[in-house]
Length: 367
Ligand code: OSB
Ligand code: MG
Image (cartoon, rainbow, N blue to C red):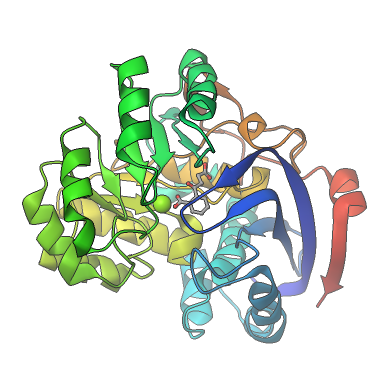
C-alpha cells in the first residue's frame, strides 16, 4: 500500500454535560480527524483524540497537529507497506506523541481492513459479537448532582460506573453512590492525583467493594504504586503509567497494578494496543478499553478492540449520546442495556458524515 494524500481536520463538538477530572473541566472537545487515501483510491479514517491541554498526557491538539503535519504525514507519504503493523513500526521512529501516532495507525487499519474485505474487530483478533459498556462520570459540585448522573446510567443498563475522584472528592461521594446502588459494579479513577501521603484515604476506599482503583498515583510513580498494591486488596488499575508496551512489562515486573486500562490513543494506536493486550494476557492480567471521549471514528475503533478475548471487564465504550448530541459518523455508537454491538461491516464499521464534518471543521490541511 502507498498513501498519496493525508488530510487533517480539526472538529469541535459540544459535550451534552460538562466533564471534570482531577485536573480540569471541559464543555466541548476538539479532535483531529484524519484521512489517508491510498494510490488505488481506498480511504481510511482515523481520530486523534488528544485533549486540548497537556493535563492527561504531554500532548495537546496543537502539538498533535504540528507533529502530524511535520513528522508523521511525511513518514506515511514515503512508506510502502503490506500490513498496518509495518506502518506503525515506521511511525514509531517518532518518540512519544502517542495520540498523534494513534490517529495514523487507526486510519491505516481502517483503510487496510476495508481493502481486504474484513471487519476491523476480526482483523485485530476479536472474538466477541458485542461488548460490555461502562460509563465514566466526572467530578460534580455536590453529591446530589453526582447521584443525578448515576441514576439514569444505571437505569440504562450500563455494566459498570466509574467515578472520577480527587483529594476532597473521594470517600463521601463513593459511599453515597454505593449506598444508593448497592449492587452496581463501581470503580474510581484518580488520574494520578494522590501520593503516598494519602494512604489512609486509599485504604478507606479499599473497604468499599470497588472493582479497581485506577491510576491513584502519578504516571511515573511505579515503585510507589507497587508498594500501594501490596497494601490494598482492591486491584490497582494502570492508565497514564502505560504509554508503551515496555512500561507494561516494567509495571508487571514490579507488581504496580493488577488490571490494565488499554487506550488506543495512549498506546499510540491499535497495533500497540493489541500488543499490550497480548502481554497482559500472558501475565493473566485482565484488561478493558479506556476512552478519551472519542467521536464516532475513534469510538468505533475502541469497540473493535474491546472484542479481543482479554477484554474481560466493561470498557469505556458508552453510547455516543452520553457525550454528544450529534456525532461525526452517519450512525452513532449505541449502547443497549449496557452492550454495544461489534460491527461486522468491512473496515472500521462507521462512516463519517462528510457533510457534517465539512461544515463543522475549523481547519483543514491536505498533504
Ligand atoms: O482517565 O480515563 C481517563 C477522559 C479524559 C481524560 C482521561 C480519562 C477520561 C475518561 C473518559 O474517563 C471515558 C470515556 O471516554 O468514556
Ligand atoms: Mg483513567
